[in-house]
Image (cartoon, rainbow, N blue to C red; front, side, top):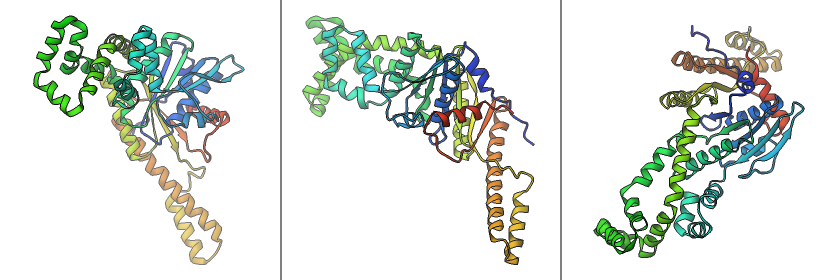
Length: 377
C-alpha cells in the first residue's frame, strides 16, 4: 500500500506574508488558470493585495472571473471585507516589449527601434519572446511593490517553464557571433568599424544578402545596434527575476488532473523544478472523482444491477447502480495514478480538489474552488 503523501496546506502559504510569488504550472486542460484565480481571490479574502498574471494567451482567466477581457495593465476585480484586493491581467508580450523600449531608450532611439520592421516581427512572433516578456513583466510587478502577492498562471504545456531559461537563452542570442558582428560598427565606430564588419562577415554577408536582401540585412543591423543597450539591461533584470524565483518567498504549485498523461507531466515539472533549485510547495490534483457510496464497491454495484436487469425489475435503479460502478472504477483508476506519483515523489505535499458539476465563470465559483483547495482533511 502506498504511503500517504504530506498534505498541502494552501491557507498556510497564502497567510505567510513572506510569500510574495506563487507560480502555477502544469499541462493544458487541468484547471491551472482556475486554480490561479481561486488562489488570488482566497488570498484577497484573507486580507492580501493580490494580482493574478496569466501568461496564457487564451482568455480563460477573464472568463473564470466573469470578465469580458483583460489586458497588459492590472485591473481591479474585487475589494474584500478583510481589506484585501484582487487584480488580474493578461500578458501582452508585444506591449510589454514596447514598454521596455520606451522606458530604457531615449525618445529618438525608441522611435527607431519601434518602427524597425525586424523589431515589429521579433516583438510579436519571435520564438522565446513570450517567455522573455513573462520574466520581464513578473519582475516589473515585483519591483513595483504594489501587490504583496503575485500569482502567475503559466502557459499550458512544458513550455510553461521555458521562462526559467530566458536569461540563458537571451545571453546566447546576444553573445552569438552573428549578433556580435552586426553590432561591431556601432560599438567600434568610424570607417575601421565597417572594415571590421566586412572582414568579419566576408562571404557570409554576401550569401545572406542574396538570400534575404540588402534592406533586410540593413534593418537587422540597425535594429541590433539600436537595441543592444536595452537588451543588455533586460538580461540583467531577467537574471535578477530568476534569482527571485529561487529565493524564499516564492512558491511553485504544480497543477494536474488525476490522469496518466497529466500526472506524467506533473512529475516532469516536479523534477525540473528540483533541477533548477526552485521552491516547490506541492501538487494540486484537480477534478478528482469521489462517490458518497464508497462502501458499495464497483463489483457489488455491477452485480446488483445485473440481478435487477435479469429479473426485469427497477430499470432506473439498475441504471443508477451501473453509473455508480463506472464512477467507482474511474475513482479507483485516478487513485492508482495518484499513488504512482506519490510513490515516486513521497515528499511532495498534495491536495486533491473534487470535480465540480458546473464550470467556473464568476467569483462565487472561484470562491468554492478556493474553499476546496484549502481543505486539508
